[in-house]
Image 1 (tube, rainbow, N blue to C red):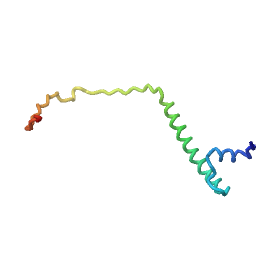
Image 2 (image 1 turned 90 degrees about the vertical axis):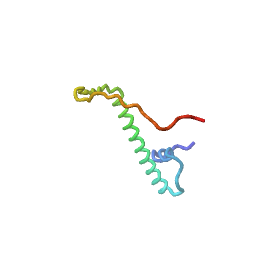
Image 3 (image 1 turned 45 degrees about the horizontal axis):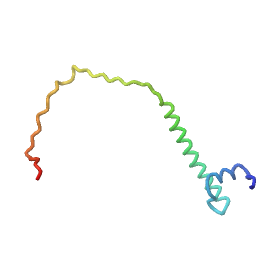
Image 4 (image 1 turned 120 degrees about the vertical axis):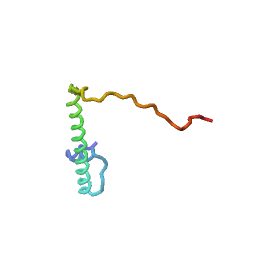
Length: 88
């Protein structure tokens, strides 16, 4: 087994197969893949940090209703229908 040439060689191999037979093109594709990987990594770190930060929030929300301003409850009228609900 050959010894890897340098860290870029190992990183580009880890990103996936070589995109082209031309080394310059393959390096550009590896840079784009690295940027995509970095954005995924940053996004996932932000999501996990948010979940950990709010893991055990003990914030309470109190809703106060002033009953003196509420109208009296009125029973709704019974529903009437002119349709017969008979089945054959």
